[in-house]
Image 1: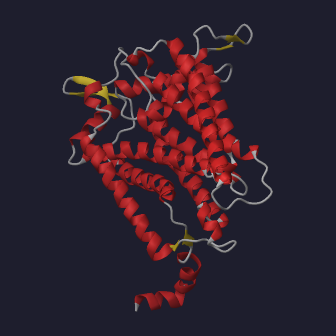
Image 2: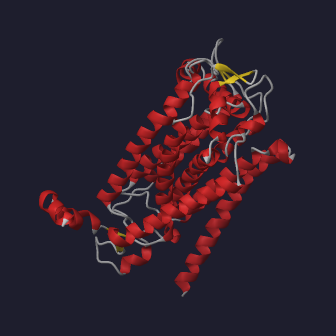
Length: 412
């Protein structure tokens, strides 16, 4: 009765025919993107809960005879609430799961060749989305304002401030002064809860709009089954919706499991900011940049006149990571495709590209290990050697395996 009443006024049947019958191809790797999306939804929901108790201020207040920052005290209050600490840990882990799922999603797109024509724009949109997710993680990491997060955020300020000529202005604008300035936490809070989420929502919406317009790419095996221009899969409703609900609740359960048994960032342990600086390493998704900084010799200083220079922090923390990310972003434009690619491309057709992708992954892993160079007691010279040699070895081994497999297929 209610459906019929609404259908007469809103033409729900037309909506159902146009959208709810949209076909989705079936493959387990397609869920990486959905896990990233659902993690973002959980971040929003848990973030709203945390908003009610968090105080975005570094102002000192007196608690129990001690003066501590208001932001730090509000985190202690959240931890003392029923389920408060669990919600905070779910929020923390959701950020990690989102970034990990985005990385796996982009790896699937790269190794299947689905960054090529006509999906170059969506690849660039994905790179912007990934960058925004990193910025969300960085700004959120600063908000507890304990000894650990204040030192880590201060390192980010120092790297930005060391950019020649424009660095001090950029750093003071982004951090609302010399970190930790009185306005730093409110400014980073605004980025984290307003600006970046809005940009993420817009970017995700654009990404999905382009995907709907261009339709999904399909596994290569579907090429000989589905008719030209048709998608082989299941309709959005009810099959795909059922799978999406399962993935959502599975992601949520994993996050609660991690929050319950793998607590992270214990603010009580680190305490409020002090003059002493604890040993700080960035989160895993930024560890490769930390590894680059450690590899750059301290005497690599490029003078730019009498008043400015490019120091190792700028080279390792901005220039080289910027070059690497630019190369990744421009990958679609390194190929000249005459026809649109709507199916996964077999790796045998792209041996150099596939081998380069494996080499990049090995390079990121090698740089991440270098981030723990001091803890692992590895000589920095050895780190420089394996960071260069291992990606090259990975490239040639992958290339050899692909070529050999291709020859075996031809002989069959």
